[in-house]
Image: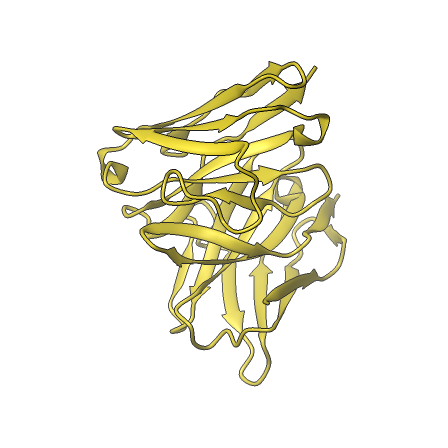
Length: 122
Length: 110
């Protein structure tokens, strides 16, 4: 059974770079046809997919974050990294990593980390 | 702006039934299948429904799903206080090549 765990600083200063890591256990991220997503939830708001890295290495970034966001994987570890530059208070959110894939005809997010709260301070 | 629209909140009494709607706003998603997620406070979201109406193993049959046209509905019967959560519909948006969520619906069990 796959398990995902986010880690990273809970507090980042405005204008600096946010870096988070998602450690995946129980499933190699380099094959299997899965999408490894970063999803965030602003306080009191809904879930927002901000990007993913496909098992092939292809990436998708939300248009609103494309200029500041990078998602990558480690060369020898089962980790997915998120880097978000020039953060502002609007980037304060709970950040989740989640595995996406196809079950029958449906694209689903079938495994999730517990999420990590990131607060951007001025 | 998501291609999926949900009501912000619904409520019902314990033991009753509630439905949550999810309306698609783009023809790009007409032929795709909906999923539903339960997000309990302080927990990770959990997949409830896929293929519009199928339940993963372990999801009780109190939860059901249906689809009509470009919209979907989640039904919950025999409501329990433990069902109080945010519920999200999801779908693959081919225009983005990404999964997307509706805005979420907060269920209150009165």
